[in-house]
Length: 284
Image (cartoon, rainbow, N blue to C red; front, side, top):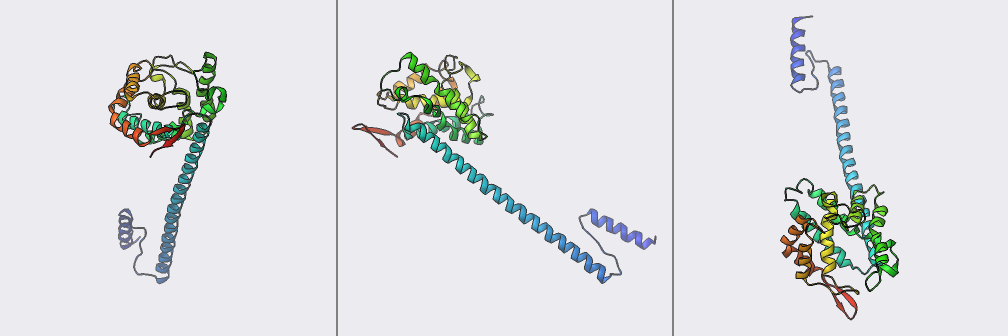
């Protein structure tokens, strides 16, 4: 091999190592040059096509993901509405509880015990799944679910089954929201000291989502008027949460909820409901 060829090849190798994709040597052969140019134009066209195709596919995936999320949200709304039609609860109860839950979770995320469990994604999951906590009530007979007076011990045992009904209804889904809803439905009547139902689990063995929903749900139930009871005062409801701290409720959830009292009252005021001659007027 001639020395000049060695030099050219060496220079070409250096050029390729520096990022060049090809090189030509002198004397230039027009047919070879044209072939090289056509090859690289074809490669450029292919790369552009693949890049555009990738961007198109990314847009399609994003659009389909939004469609799936929208369908899921509508499904949850429909399921929640179905439960509402069989219960004395109202749409505003569901909305208030959902917002109490979100407020509580956003504050808890700054506590060392919960910061690794409550990021943006998990709080959004909790927010979307919280309305499903009582979905199991669709399996409870009207004679018990709509009874205006106090339940007998036998009737209460039947009522308690709604926790497992909700879990069984939701737990087989591939949706993370419905799976979270199943966990909440099963656990939101468990108590911190282990005296709750359906499984009698205690403390941090109760899923965090269920512990959060328990505080929000009980507070709203206490402070809401229903055909079978008068609404408790805010002070009485707050006292009940304090008294249940460490027995009924996770103590940190109670303390954090009470620390967010101004936000709680804002939510309650915005989505309040009042009874006029037996009819409920929704305020927003």
